[in-house]
Amino acid sequence: MRRADFTSDADYYRAHRQAFVLAQQLGVTPIEAEVELKKRQRQECAARLQAKIEAPLQPGMAALRGGHDPEEPREPWWNRD
Image (cartoon, rainbow, N blue to C red; front, side, top):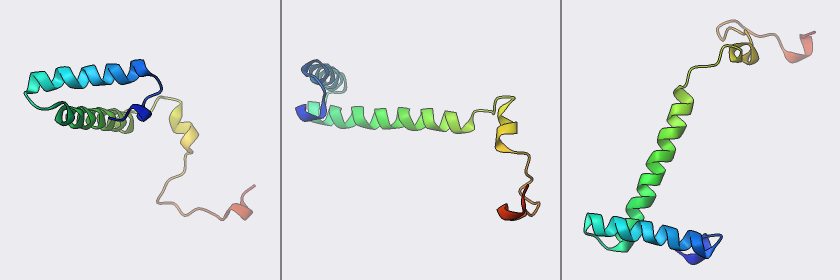
């Protein structure tokens, strides 16, 4: 964790405190706790992204994607009216 990575001192100190408390809970060094925090944040981000991908389409969204059947051949764009 570098101070230059944060927009303010308050953000830096919040992140440091979070890592320090986690280090105490896990019984590891603060640097190892920072690595663990980053790993957890990446997992949370990946889970949010996966939830977005797997979310069902809203009722009106299917029309926006077009009613094209992927198995049906498409005519070239210059022939479309």
